Length: 546
Image 1 (cartoon, helix red, strand yellow):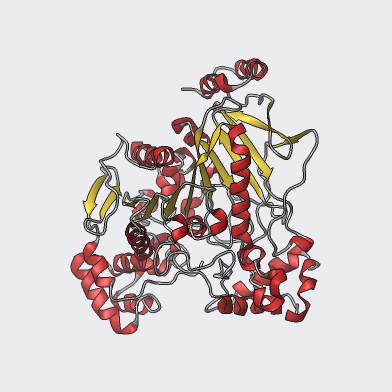
Image 2 (cartoon, helix red, strand yellow):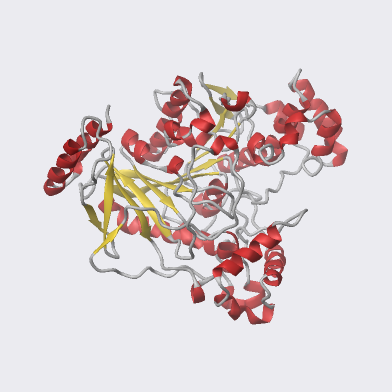
């Protein structure tokens, strides 16, 4: 179907005036509907009216503020309400991302776009919806972006919600929020009650975004009583953390954790140590924290870049178990009671660390046996390395040293956390949990990446065409997108991911441990990777620094 035809088919939910304008625009665009002028699509939020655009029949609104700017006296504090505006606010371009230190991106991400504009006025969100003011109660899918708690934004092209909204008649929302020291600099021990929530300001931003969804999404055709939060990598860690936050209770009803189960937060003492490192870098003494409100944004970013460029362990700015915003560890030692009834999907990809580790260290792809043992330092206790390597060699006959490294580190870095989260969720005996693994191997770069971290993004958002550098071309990637996006939509709609596009997927239980293995021929396997799990069971679950 051409873009022009999709645009016309999506006009039914517009008002009569908008219908006429949009139809005229689509006809003027020519037979393929390329570069069609956008109709004037407006909607009223609780702060004022916004103007969006039409994309493939989907109404798109970008850069809507859900809270006030976070600069000056608002730094490191609970987000403040945004101001009302008069007239119609343009919502046709993405808003800025949180200030951050630039990161390297692997060749497989070359098809994806990355924001360039950064500002402390970054509390904005984007909405894709099939209809406005039509009294429909569509499922709402709120996406939390990855790149840990330190970088990224919700505005990459791979996160565009047009195809997901088209496919499932759902409303898609993506969010920007405070990150790194802007969102997670814990000053509670140094500055007292005034800064008690500073170590979780970035998470409070997400609560504010969810409150905006609750208050406004009905006008966008969504159901505020059926909201799913989902995220990958650092976004999955944010989902995991929100599930343990009392302030977020009632603001979402389902949760999906992709390659980022986050079990444990920082202690106040740990977070205070990291805060002191940053204060030294920007020449602010602990007794003069009020000066932080006047330090230029660029100086804060430069200080962060300085301390993150040192060799060895680096400071960690991520959620803090402060006893207020985050009363307990998110998933340690068990699942949080505050979200016990919320159903979940939890999963990973087959070879997460080809990207997570291999992209920055190409030498890992050429390891020999001695290099394997050296490279596992920090991932496996010294006394256990020989046993673990021997066990994996038996399970993976003929595997190279590099293959063994990526298998072991993927289990340690991602899969053990996913297993633990699924087990603890199932043990609550309330909301069900479904476990998956994406095992399809991308053919790009000669297949060296296997099934890397972030491979699932193209499939979940049904944005294969925007992800050729990651997934290649041909029919297979779209087949995976048909399966995974349909499952995610079904889960958002009903709380159950089963669809006709994939085999019957049972909820996870401690007895059978059923796992959906997504591939060109997907299958369900009980106790998938059980021998690997048993090999690693004597080791404490690896604590991930994000």
